[in-house]
Image (cartoon, rainbow, N blue to C red; front, top):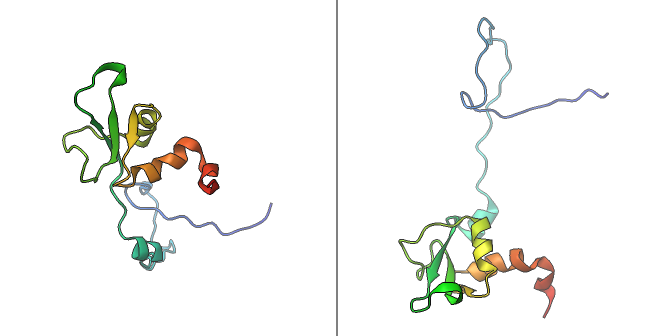
Length: 123
């Protein structure tokens, strides 16, 4: 066994609460400096909202029904469609009747998850 310092960041009251009858006046605490703005965020901008929506193509019903999967903030996405999480979006994207929107980047986001990352280098 080796002695080591261990630090943990906690937020009260979500993570900790005082024990009744214990004096905490002598506990050493230090304020953390605010974290600097990420360079990645400076370059890429804010993250897009999570989730995908499915747009059904009118006119075809049943197993042959076609659909387009969009990112939540896509201009072409239907505003009243239910929001899909990534698991449901992948399930829908695997169907041969579903097309992934290239306008909003849905295809670029989900294709590596569907086919694996190895195909990216294939030309």
